[in-house]
Length: 133
Image (cartoon, rainbow, N blue to C red; front, top):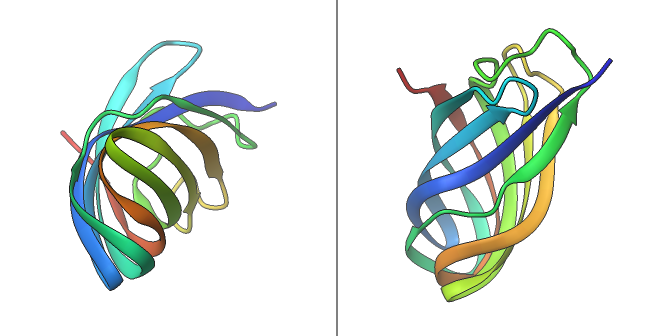
């Protein structure tokens, strides 16, 4: 049985011109209970394009997990993030987030939505997603 969740970017910042890094706050919601938790992601990697400054709230991306024992508190761990988009104020973006360790190991969230910020490009990052207390 699958469990339904939603994830979105609350705020973040970073930069990349070939090599880059970012710090982003994500919010995860359990669709069934409507319980939400915040995570801070810190990562680095490679990109094509130019991105600088911050990003604001994005639209929700819904995803299902194969493990029915997960909760909104289960998404701490190492992740691989592929993302891209274009925004000058408001724009469009995609994200592919895959958990590599922790309770959510092997799970993924993929989506396309609206974002806010400044930049254009595609980048692949690896980093750690920590549950905020």
